[in-house]
Length: 140
Image (cartoon, rainbow, N blue to C red; front, side, top):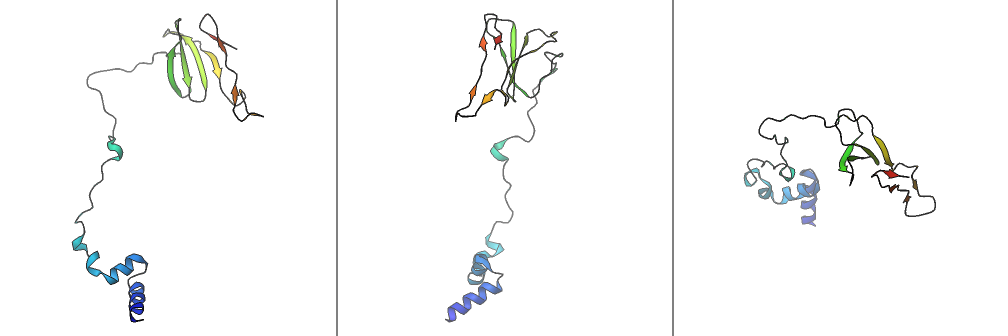
């Protein structure tokens, strides 16, 4: 019973919790002299540099197709067998245009928005995809 009273009084006087109990029972175990003098600095997560690397030398960035704009483009791919390119946007659109810096016209090839996906009675959505024509364009 005496031990229970000692534990209870130690627990309450040290501020409660397991740490308070340990501090009351083993004060030498939690002294600052036994700990680290300074908190060590942690390296950057995955050692990722804080700033992107800068290539050496002079370089200029020039828009390849200054007359065209895209929303959140994630890829550009050549259309096989033609002088056209496809640009893929994050929202599901694919655009096609002539591989010419002066081009001003882009054509919507595929748009995978909510209207194109039918999930009414099928657990696996189906998407209508155009078929490639002989000229490298996709047709519906």
